[in-house]
Length: 550
Image 1 (cartoon, rainbow, N blue to C red):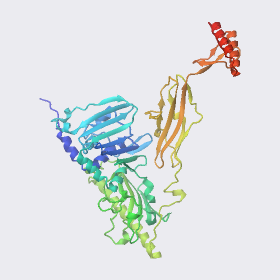
Image 2 (spheres, rainbow, N blue to C red):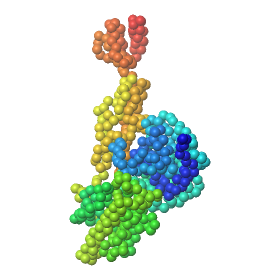
Image 3 (cartoon, rainbow, N blue to C red):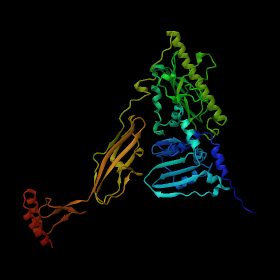
Image 4 (cartoon, one colour):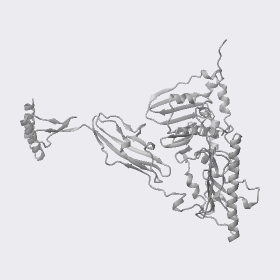
């Protein structure tokens, strides 16, 4: 009996990367890897002069074992929807299909990877043309360049061909596409930015939609399936909550919506409503659907026009905001371009609940509209959200702070012990007044980011400039500085007189046992302290001290 092994031609790599449905889908796959690596900052660069696409993050990076997993097609160890925690951050796992590096081939044939984890840097290159030329792709050699480093995060650099570069430039010429790209995650703990043509586009604050189009706001609506309450706020007052129960406990639904009413002749284009909420194909206002905090490019499951076919009394289609579904079930699956669910009992229930919730919310808002019309003959609009201190939707922003331990010793004698920089921090407060875990802090030593919070033993005199930083979700960078000083110990020379005489560098105290020498040292110091020009006397005394000591 002969033993055989499965082989696959390199052409399969080309086939799989080509079937990735779109550039934006592929880009989302790459940023999801950064998200799963607990990056708090993801930067996307379209470098036209060098024809490159660069994705750079400050996540935890990859070890050699992690790189091996990355290169194992379709065999990811990640479990989609599982909630992981790291450095006081909790996130739902986004990747699961092992399509990480295949997505990069959607943009170009040559991809350069650089990743840093726990003091080790790994660099390697992949060339799609070389891979697909192999009759057996498993024979393609990938060479890992290993070195020590203080860097963090992962950088993926993709050499773009002319067509791909032009396609990306064309896609991002539309503001709707830019805003959706940089707001791919519903997460206040991440900053995602796009750099193109010397311009920078950043993710918007999640709560900022509450302040858009204030003159035309009709009502603000929230819902959480964990308590089944639909809450409606109008004219800064909360109305009576309504109950709505979903079909299953296998998932959770939350919504935050702003419903507008535009009087005849008013165009939403002049209302400062973000184009993030403009639907791709017709520019109609729409809330965004997020599955496990990742933007789901689907407008059918929560269609703002769902009641259009009914009489207008039940339709309030001018809606923005966020619809969020959270689910860890293995039954939650998506089609190839991630725009629809794979149909099964779980996904049918989710779709039905979203449709029913949408219909119910619009009907409740329409009843309020008709009541307005009936009582006053017109429909009033204006700031909708509540300002009650007890349930403030837009909390007061405070100054974020890093509080230093000012009483902590900052002078050290050589050789020093290892120093834990966290001991210099008493507390960290964000702009909401909440305490932040010290694990969220970043430490810079002399301007260079440290991969740990520990300063190793110092053996030479010096001073260290320490910077402590964290990114506040609302107000941005928070930074505090302090210095640590390292010097040789100054020890007293003591004779019969216990007062300090001369100083010199020693790790231990030093006592002179010759009485005459100690007295001379005492006297010469007194002469020197007079600040008179007795240099000859001092010189003779020092020579005498030397001779007596010898």
